[in-house]
Amino acid sequence: MEIILFLVILIFSVVVHEVSHGLAANALGDPTARMMGRLTLNPIVHIDPIGSIIVPLMLVISAQLGAPLMLFGWAKPVPYNPYNLSNQQWGPAMVGLAGPAANFAIAIVFGIALRFLPLSSLGQGTPLDAVSVVFSVIVYLNLVLGVFNLMPIPPLDGSKLLFAIPGLPWQAKIFMERYGLILVVMFIVLGFSAAIFPIVSFLFQIITGHPINLFF
Image (cartoon, rainbow, N blue to C red):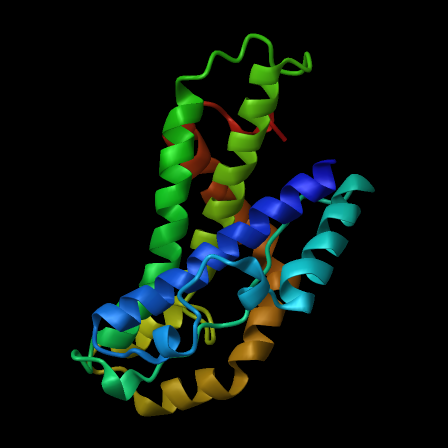
């Protein structure tokens, strides 16, 4: 049941993330996602078999076997045409940041709700206990998605903001776009837990008022 809970919440979180990209692009003048039917919360339209199911499932199983809990995933990217955006310099950055912003918004809403839930019955299997666990997973996963995607490495969303900064050498942009996927894999393997988890843990406690190890 834990695995199913994590996967369901993760899938809907990455769907909201991708739809937010499309909504931002549409608001800025590019209707590509809307015309392709991608501005929908129907997960079937967005699910990537590897990023939405296989990778998260493997990470959850690894955590059950004693590995650190490092759960993340992705959906099919929502397409957009940057040349249609009304703001050519900052438009791509605004579209890119819309995804993490949606994840942070979800984390804040459910985190504030979790802050006011009485947790005296936590771990006793009560209905309120179940609600607390579900809310904590929603906050945790959306913080992970938000923080991870803000890393300034292509194809992550943070790179869109980095590339919009005036004066960035074009050689640096070409290098990062060429080797971005390799850099992302290296970051996941070598630094994901050390770099991401402390930030997520800090934000979790700020938002919910409770330490993350109370739930995980």
